[in-house]
Length: 453
Image (cartoon, rainbow, N blue to C red; front, side):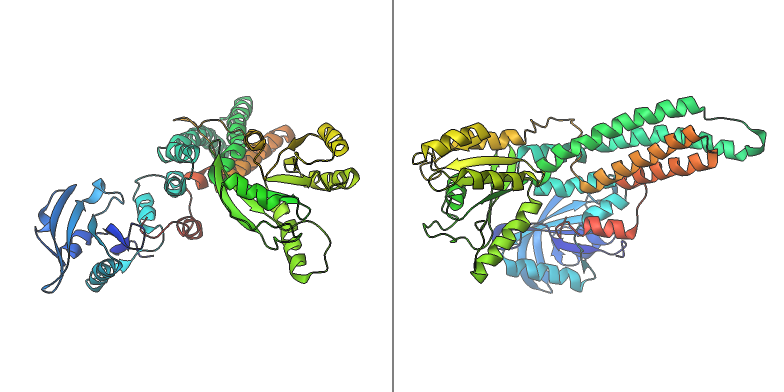
């Protein structure tokens, strides 16, 4: 990308709407917009002002608009920016953007406005990533976690760790300049105490990722069991709508059916799957294969049995197989109103949740159990929670590098090797906030943003 270009993109959702907002940013953004805007001279207007006028192609009026002017340091990108509020007709939006392109702008790449804000020092890389998280937040916890990160809470923690490590790194580097004089500026006992202190902070952040991942990405939850045990009926009951086809014919569900619901402030993606059984039906066999693939990716499994048809030995065999997945499994016994009393008695000893999906009996108790399995609590202002897998990996890499420093001191290695591992730790911390970046890293991060942000 050429970051000196003037870029333009639709900032609101494409489609017909009451209004649409078109963003323009770059050194010539105000001047260029002024070439198609008829009203006040935009180049002479102060920052943070709004002006009524028309967008024209020569003398032809394209639309009547409001233009907001933001100058230099006072804009989101810290460069001249304009936001054009026009009527939300796709045709109008297309014509306005085409006019700006004709006068020298180019279409923005995904996330390019936020990338410019980062490159121009509006915020660091972790805060920039939080912008995308805030846009995509689907629960209050996800919104608050993203807001905390965007306001710099996480970055403050990382920078504090990095600053302390930089101090000792500089002392070790100083020792290397006086290598022949056998001096020790960085006292090893102090360095050990510092590293143990840093690792304690890192461990807290690393451990918060389990909670943060649930908050940000939700919980993929697979409903599994033999054909015709009521999986689709349970999905419909949880969603309170007829999402999946329900039939007494075994094998009705032949593909994966998904939908999402928020329970207890946590986003769950429920996945209804084909029944687990051996089958000669080619299409059904493909569905069973996909079920097994979904089970490998699940964060939670609802294992269902039919109390009117199940046999105890077969159930316990399937329970053992699912427990081997090493993910939480909630055992659900369906059709409790019609169940075999002896089977009910046996399964009561095996931690089964008894429900009737058809009648929605005990459904609230099952929902409470699902939520309790992933209890995350309420995210409050100021809470520092790691929600980003990239940050999590960098924290792990930093922790490993500091472990190597401790091991090196135990073995009595020289300062140059200690300095190498300390620099490695600083490198991984710097990747989080963007003190250290590469084009590939930035492209990967901002390429996931929506165009116009």
